[in-house]
Picture 1 (tube, one colour):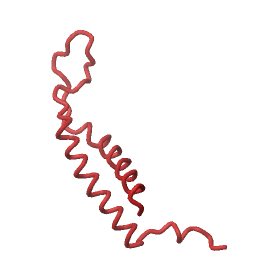
Picture 2 (cartoon, rainbow, N blue to C red; picture 1 turned 90 degrees about the horizontal axis):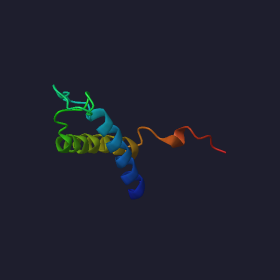
Picture 3 (tube, rainbow, N blue to C red; picture 1 turned 45 degrees about the vertical axis):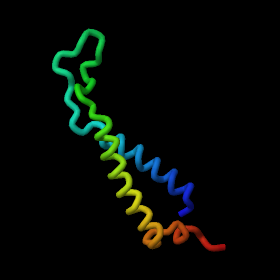
Amino acid sequence: MHWFTGILTFIVIWWLTLFAILPWGNRPVENPEEGHATSAPAKPRLLIKFGVTTVVAGMLFALLLWVIEAELISIRDYIPQT
């Protein structure tokens, strides 16, 4: 995998992982102020979630890179030879 493709792949995996991790542990505010959303989390803990996202995305990227480099799955198997 080319380094630029690797960076873009990691970014996509990171964002997908972030959206999966964002709802973890959210509790709404018990008494929201006037004009605030009732579903807004009391303590979003974004720095912890960014750290967890980075670690999980790194492991998923390493797994994907291993699958690609070991040629367990190859797009070349599905392209007809002319």
